Image 1: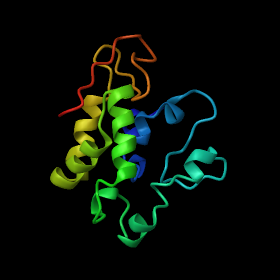
Image 2: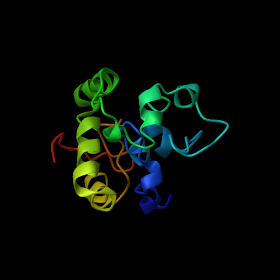
Image 3: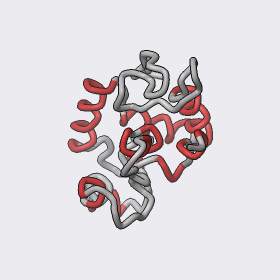
Length: 143
């Protein structure tokens, strides 16, 4: 897989997850194309995502929740808490960083953050170790 293709703005979901670091995108079989990429064979959870299809989000006419007047809403705070606890990353912080520094800078930082320093493979937000060499992933919540 082309490592840089994981760090493209089409891979950033409305909730702030980088789909390029999601195990569903990285796994060898039955890959997900990403939340914003149209694909008929996506898992049901991506097709019915309550954040992506949120009425307020759609009215804001934006691809990202940070443009909503209720950001971060209860739903975003809930998923953010799950990601902070289980995967040591903050989706709200991802969105705030995109809003504050811009998508280009955010994606540049993501390359460093999610590339294994030992073997150069992509790291997954959902796995505690590099799927290629087994190095422990040490990703900070705060940047």
